[in-house]
Image (cartoon, rainbow, N blue to C red; front, side):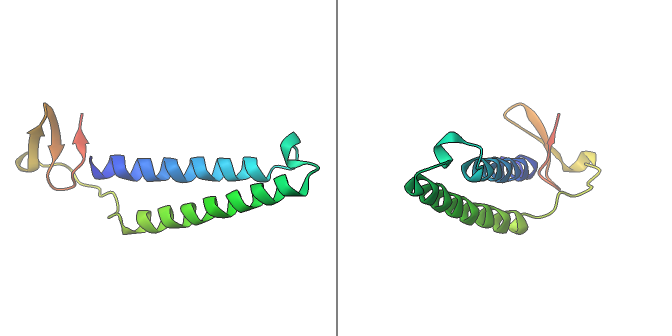
Length: 93
């Protein structure tokens, strides 16, 4: 997996978890109205999602920034039929 793909996947996971959290806490949802138990369950699950989001953000901070590499020819290599840059580990398609 290339660095760019890992960065995109972590970012996508954060976005999906945020959307799920918002859906759990949405007061317009019929299951989130009435019974206190369902509200507590939704709140608890939203807290777990928030922890996941925090962990994913911490992982994202550990990923090196996507460089502005110009992919010089001497740093290009081919693996599984696809070219990639050995300098920044980005796929060259």
